[in-house]
Length: 118
Length: 113
Image (cartoon, chains in turn green, purple):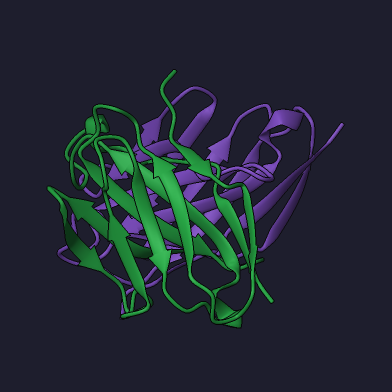
């Protein structure tokens, strides 16, 4: 069964450092997403990406964040200068289409990358 | 503003019993809801969805009920099994959004053998 994969599973970094979180979406999917989950809290939307550009972004996704699809398989989230409050689980998701029109548009989530900022 | 939340943070049930997990939402314009299951150390996994033109939808051992009058939905799990132990989230799409999922806070379901 196809699945979304993410690397690394755990990333530890010093405050102010740049981190890149990597995701390999399901191969025939066209829409890609990043969410984060601070420990014990709900999952929060960060950004959606389609056709090599950002479709939507939340207030959390400020200038310190960027996304990129550098090749045909990877989808990355970069945090330019990490802060303590960036510590969270970061989930990548992908879907065949947008919204809620059919099960084709179901968002499949990866296992997450736990980011710890010291 | 729009928000999706849950009534109870934890629920403990006996194996074989039925479980009911509740969710309240505030945006009366929401037209589509999803229940996700998140097992420890994993990402959210789609369970079942329902459109606002429906009151009930059934899957395998799961049923989602939607009451638009009181803006409430519930997830019913029949014959709960140890493998059902997880955190359950309801979610909806943000207004005008095609991909921005708004998650509730989650209910942790524990199944006692």
